[in-house]
Length: 113
Length: 114
Image (cartoon, rainbow over all chains, first blue to last red; front, side):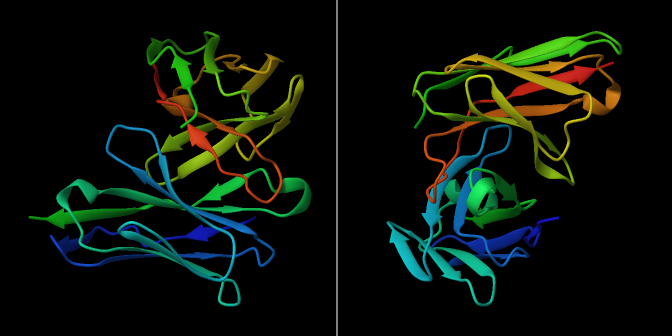
């Protein structure tokens, strides 16, 4: 059974700070990694994809991947109250199962004004 | 974002009745998925489709069936609804089945089984 683990939170940060969200996964052959943002009562929205070791930056968001440690993280710089949401980590398989994702249970982020 | 719609958006039904949820996409994506989301469990895959008439089970498929007769439509049927199937159901689509398997979600259907 593939597992994706996230701290459930809540993670509380002040406005303007850096929020750091972490995720570990159990399947060593995983090849694709995603972060979704989900506002309360809404559907998940894809915000970042990462496939190679290292950092990937998109605006205020940076995804970091370390396959050796089976660890992926999301940094949100200059956090805003509008970033308050649940963040879901998702991991994709390899080969015949690479079009399926396994999701973590999510980390609730609260950004305080 | 993919144009994905789900219907109905809300439904209340009684135990033992059949229920069908519909997912419709306008992006010509090959892959389609049905998930349920419950507190404490996160998103769990029910069934998925990798092409017209090509479907397979996910991790929580018992009590559910699916059909895909057209690229744009993916139906989820609860054959005889139970209270444990009260949940929020999300449809998702994906355009690429190789390394870049991003998925995009519909707005969801909130189902209550009394």
